[in-house]
Amino acid sequence: MGELKMRETMRAVCVTAPGGAENLEVREIARPVATADQVLVRVKAAGVNRADILQRMGRYPAPPGAPSNIPGLEFAGEVVETGSEARRWQVGQRVFGITAGGAQADYVIVPEEGLAEIPANLDFVGAAAVPEAFMTAHDALFTQGELEMGECVVVHAAGSGVGTAAVQLARVAGARVCGTGRTAEKLERARSLGLDEAIVIEGDPRNFVERVREWSGGAGANLVLDLVGASLFAANLDALAMRGRLLIVGTLGGVQAEIDFSKVMSKRLRITGTVLRSRSKAEKAEVTRRFAAHVVPLLARGEVQPVIDSVYKLNDVRAAHERMESNESFGKIVLTT
Image 1 (tube, rainbow, N blue to C red):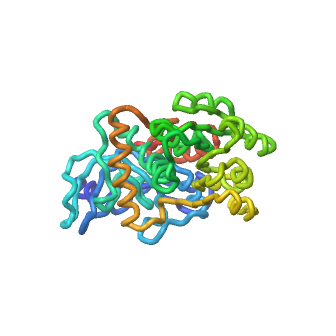
Image 2 (cartoon, one colour):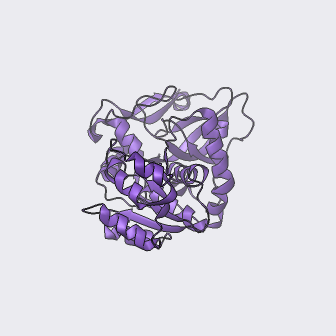
Image 3 (cartoon, rainbow, N blue to C red):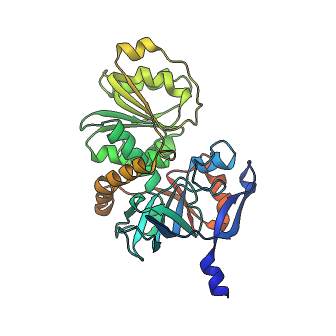
């Protein structure tokens, strides 16, 4: 009887009510079952993201079809069950991927095209630190930002999960990389990932603009990957070169800012907002396909690698959230089951 219960239930991090980390509990809930083209993955480790914090606070609800009260956008684990229409994966394969929610649990259900195979040189903790950061960075830099060899790119919040991934991917692609951050200590650590220039953001944002212009030989940045948002928006426009591209990925610095259309028009700038979580199944499949084709081989060869700040057990999820909210982390925070 006990064995049957183990097969039918699982542990999951649950948001009991909007608010602080004290509103997170690990509960026993029904285990999902793979149907159609779905794959059931036994989660070995899951990444923690800012979106989890916002969801817990009631400011970022899960999209339709995703668990409303179980956070977790990325995972690494083993295939344990496949639906009747799933053909790509076999039981026992090591896989990782992104999902719209529910990954911070013992099991997660994912469409088969939303998975990629973990390279042999990564353990589950390292693998769990990869999907959200590297897929976001790769999609923003190359698919949408069209970054090319030799271009100058600015990565804001270079010590974050997406930031550390973006710095490495841009370096491997032959771009010149400038990273920004709140502290010199974080930026010094990011230099080992491939930064050519490091700028501490403090005081007047115009100081950032002048530093970027000096670094780029007066031309400005070809691409800015912004994980900060409104507080740096005007400075980003000033720091961009002619026909520059601004990719807005995060909004820690606010969601509303004034825009000078004449600047956008005269410099022929392109401003793009991006998010992975709410994309359609087909769009996520394409992001995963590109990730598997372009990024996984780099991970397998050790040319890029996950940057892990800290690892917590699932039962210590409150401490993991508190660590992220402290803004002291460098790289990814990971939960293990």
